[in-house]
Length: 150
Length: 150
Image 1 (cartoon, each protein chain N blue to C red):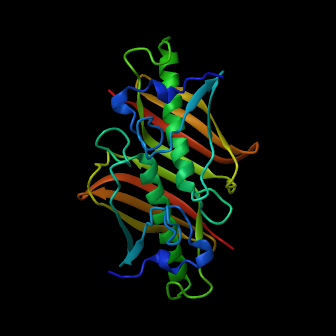
Image 2 (image 1 turned 90 degrees about the vertical axis):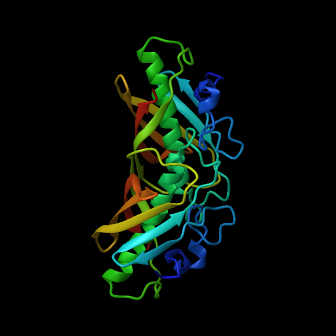
Image 3 (image 1 turned 135 degrees about the vertical axis):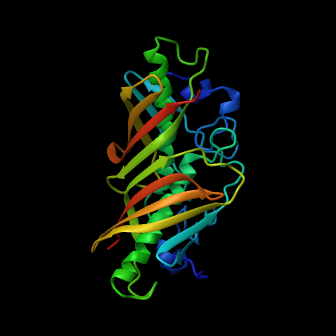
């Protein structure tokens, strides 16, 4: 496992995202790592991140998928260009379309693992797929169409 | 305009949602009103709800659409059964699928207006469509497939 998150490589002026910006003191600080051909984020929701009793709030799950998906897109962008992660000029993607399928309730109170993979890499657009697992069970599936910031 | 939000009608044990639960002290307290054939939520993001500079965080926008969509589904459910909003037994919906299209950046620092409408009403499933407007401009479009809690 790499110890540097993809979000650690975002330039300072693009590192305030509420979901994953390291410079946002109020945010979720989502951190995504490359593991082989996949990307991984681990996140434990707070008790107040509740939907109905016992379940994680769907908007938080959508947020995790969103930021994990754009980080996965950045990793794919560097790789497609044969560049080291974080090398200049920095690559940063934003979400154009987000689809989230809540397959089953996501239990609150346990660590979640998001695993991402790349479906398609274009010059400006990257499509990534993300699944959220709780104790090894896939609870949510998402797809992110990410667009490279100019 | 009605002064009672649809979320005010959710039973106490289902009113802790981080997005729209009136009983969650840490949540967003999204409040949805019926206006004619549409539903409306007004929400002003905080400065820390940032994505890239000047823009609202996409995960928050997904959250707004999520809770607005399920509230719209509840309104549609009562209406389809010819019942008064909030009459017993209470109707509460959860999201099975959420799709969000970020048409253009949503400016941070202004009040947002979400407008929802019903696409399809079934016995258990309701499909709703939601748009997010900033100063009259549609910035985000979403669709929520909501399922009635038993």
